[in-house]
Length: 173
Image 1 (cartoon, helix red, strand yellow):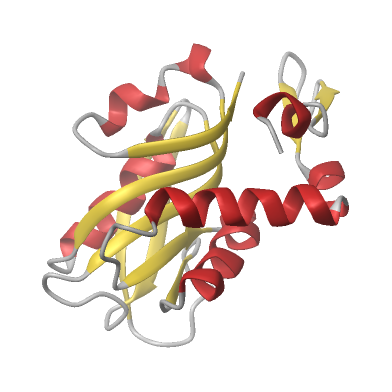
Image 2 (cartoon, helix red, strand yellow):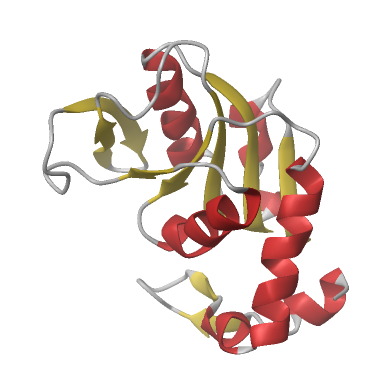
């Protein structure tokens, strides 16, 4: 499927989660099995030639894309979660939000020294969360092999926070 066809399946939800925000709802795309399959296959094609030791999906919608992509590519899946959600010992990276802080965690044994990891999320906005996920991988000696997104909000310049990294986004707004 072409980018325009996929983009047409993304629904705008005005004033969600707060006034002034236009939320990009991917659930209509996920409901369309041909479109969802095309997303996973397109991302797999983009990274098929890149040696990977795992795919890290960012909570929560990054799980929706990351887990089937890991399955498709035959590599391990690593969840990056909000604090307190993982049962084993974790490592954490904090990052700044517009008003306050947030953090991501992963199991301390999820990434080994030299492991090549693809960071995956549903959407690239300002790049803060994706940048934190990259730092999380690197904190364990891993190498970020790339960053893959279903949607990129290019007007928010999230790529600027991921400079020097290979970035793939299937749909750009």
